[in-house]
Length: 338
Ligand SMILES: Nc1ncnc2c1ncn2[C@@H]1O[C@H](COP(=O)(O)OP(=O)(O)O)[C@@H](O)[C@H]1O
Ligand SMILES: [Mg+2]
Image (cartoon, rainbow, N blue to C red; front, side):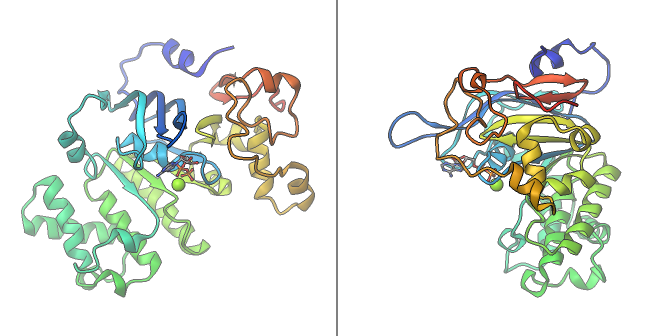
């Protein structure tokens, strides 16, 4: 059986450009007042190709935000990257001085989060805020920054952008404010965008419009994206590949078609059933949350306490992420057959 890291190392050497992000054996911990630290991300390998939209799905507390912010070397306080490598566009981020990371954030890598209002400065017009980002990161004069701001407002389909430049955040709807946040994230044409649950607060129609827009803008600008959500259904329309994260570990990773037509991990199937309208399917697969720490046994499968298909081996032997079929990885001793 191939391990994920083996697979990546044994690929034929090519002259093509490096992936946008290459994460190796990343571990992120939160210190505990007593005892050993809580591991939020465990030995995680992840590679995001150029131009790809990579979906990351998981329940609340799975580690999605911790992973996203760790890629920017900013894990949520008081978390810390305990080990691992982060390589962005062929450049190792771990040894870089913090000032250089600051320059990259917002320019080469940008992050879109929910609650656009808390992201925006209530005292500045949206035009000033967008233009400021361009001035700081792209070092363009005021007039050019203003023009770039106008262009990006058009790109995110803000009606009457000239007038909207003068508006303050509180004068905008949630959907409009989210478009402004996206405009700020995109103005420098970053190579990599992280969207962390960014559209979950919006109503379904607005959410669909914004996702479509985000996808098109990323594609037009050749940006890659890590798209994080709790809603597994959204990834079916939006992402090229999808991974499921549970307790800080990837449980399944596959191209969209394999993921949705041939899901192999019982947990993935449970997540899909939870979003299904079929009540019997939901009842068959839904399992209550385990007690905190119930799945942290280092020798057991992290999902064993909730898994309807668990066997004795799942309690004594922690499964590795292995390749079930080309590009389809699963962390399970008894994957559901393809
Ligand atoms: N600020 C924090 N302090 C302590 N532990 C945290 C903090 N943020 C996250 N964690 C831990 O990391 C785990 C993952 O959290 P998070 O990355 O926010 O998950 P998600 O974004 O998937 O909901 C949590 O279950 C918790 O144990
Ligand atoms: Mg989160």
